[in-house]
Length: 399
Image (cartoon, rainbow, N blue to C red; front, side):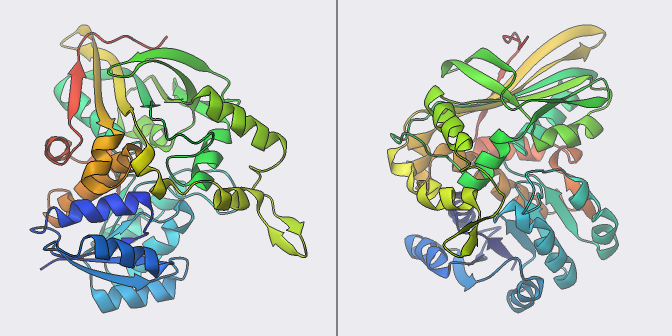
């Protein structure tokens, strides 16, 4: 009987735990390990009537030795890492030492620098391969499902993909003047960093929010979206042969951007330590502490998300366009797993990726991004487990 350890107890972890409990045949026993054990205990209590056996433990995932001890005690087959991106390498180290497969939803970024890239985790390839362990990187939605969409499009619809536009729209309203739908610290670091896109073999950097477009999203309508740097661009540039350009776009409301600009102007988004009343604090972490917890937004968030990929390429010698996307409803997500749709769209793919490792369909030694596996079983499970996808063969293109 396989066991799974879930590290983290935030909004995304909550979704992962709920979904694991819906599939006890593959997840008969899980452990929620987190720094604040009371959050794990609260999750366990809400799911006490489920068939899946739930354990909880207090864990500082920065402490490799402590993580190794807990892994050896519980003996899971896989770790689902939905903690902070700063902790990815420490958890990978622990998995290697304890002989446990690994999966995460976001790539590593240093604690003291707003920079995220895959090089640090790709450096573990030989060690995981030699240990006979699987490590899957970025099995959320973006990155994650967007990479699977790319692999699926290449396998079934194109001989060559020339252009990829990844579009992420959240039309939800949570009633707060300023709140983030996932970890505020990670969200703000991401959107205030310089943008970039891949074109003709190189990455081109842009100023934050410098480039924008208006796009008419299915079931949502016209929304202004901004070009950002996003980690899947880095892996897709390698794993999608001959691709000429990849761009990532995300929507933001005028209210969000107005508040973010004001916070930047007064230094509240800084990650540089300052001294306050005799102690060192990081302004962005203080801001995180006073902003609404994303895990509390589920009951009050209304509206829909739309995340997908638009492809331009060639099939059988003819040009072809193709758009594949998912639309999720915040209130439907809350009714099912007590979470808003942004966490839902990240947590369900982590659960699916882990299930594919446990069933052997995505199990091979080494470190991999999701687009390096056969996309078909993942795509099938998206329709089964709550993220059905839709297709359009004559989409509006992004200029």
